[in-house]
Image 1 (cartoon, helix red, strand yellow):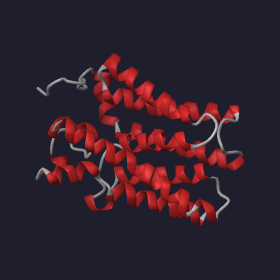
Image 2 (spheres, rainbow, N blue to C red):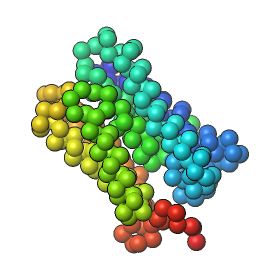
Image 3 (spheres, one colour):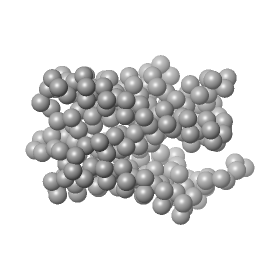
Image 4 (tube, rainbow, N blue to C red):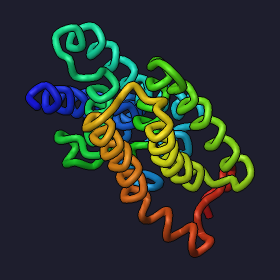
Length: 220
């Protein structure tokens, strides 16, 4: 349990300190949280500072999960019998919590989608059919975003489907997890999806009301 808590805290620190949207705003001499939607995520950075800033923000926020996985792989996995995927899921949960609720920014960060996508991307390095998490994640997000023009809806459907896929993969024996480890992993993935919906509460209201901004739509 101590190791699991340690990687969760490691993830939280990585997620909080590598707060790409906030630092991108500071680089441009603004607090990004005072503009647009008021959060430090990729979409708000892109709408406020442009596509280049948004892409850089996404890459930094996503790949901090990949970097954390490398640390776990080389520095922790050789010294424990806890499955690497389970350790990384704990770390991934910490990363999203740190990204969403950074302690030094009064717990006001992003909405966790870029950080969560980094967790999904990293799953492709695990055996069996885990690469499909990444393939399906990209495919589902792109399909919904292109057809509906709503980034928020694409993000939410993508996270919901991640949980469904994890359940199915587990039942089919396609995960490098079994027994209580698989149960723990499933709970963590559910929490990741739940966090996405919680952080997108206002977006969900706007989607229902038909007032959510579409891709390329200018703010009135």
